Image: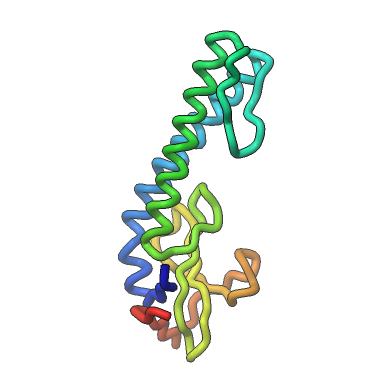
Length: 146
């Protein structure tokens, strides 16, 4: 899949979709945490990112495990759909980067679930901790496929 570069306007135009998708993902995460708690109370638990249904477990535990499998599948589908928009998902609860160009260099516009607009960027090697407010002279270039 080719890399997509976003202008600031293009990134902001996706926020309603991202708010909705990550809102659903956060609800699923909360539901999964509830299932995890019930599994722990039943003496079981979720082991890593892959959940399997234990055929030796009591039926109520198997049902909880099956529910966890379905929730994780839905979460993966949401994250895949978001990634297909061309954004880089950094955290499943709603942290994304939009690849862009600023003054001829590649940077990442950065947005976190709940923020009203894209207001930060960082260098490729800086990460979330290196977020800086958008410069006033920021001419972020998009629509370039590399």
